[in-house]
Image (cartoon, rainbow, N blue to C red; front, top):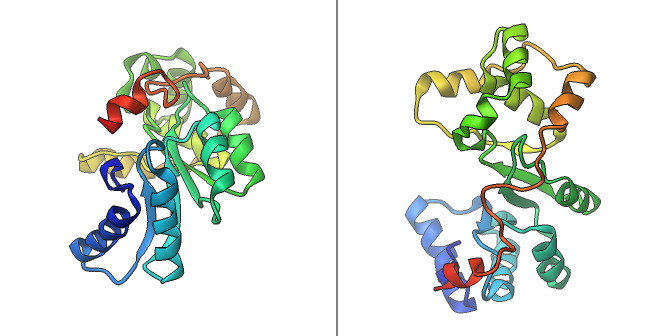
Length: 203
């Protein structure tokens, strides 16, 4: 759901518009796109739509630990999913701990760092790619999979889509997993808590 539709009545219309546009009786998972503005009203509309059978699961996007603590304690239904930036450079450990306590899935956007050249040049990733006869993207995805993160690598190229799925014929050792944990820089390309972000999106 887009930010401009968060007012309660607008949110109800947005859900019905989505169903009509998709030609569906229900949607499996529906997310609030940004955690700003009338989040409480939009979430109430999602909770009601879920109760009515229009949506199976409801979730949020871009909620940092700070924003999660601001909004979610006031919800009647805990989000099933929080979709946030996640990749080896930004491994979201604090948020993952919070979500694990509530049995909430973390869904990754930018799981391959949106093609970050520095990430793809990391020696440890390239060494592992050579060892396992894989590409760096496959090593990253193989690292992320056992962490319990939902990963949807985005591509329009058929060959890349195919290779992104070919990650289950090898397994990284515990030492290799530890080495990739050390790539975490603790911050990403997008900071939902940064001054001005909320105002810029709301306007």
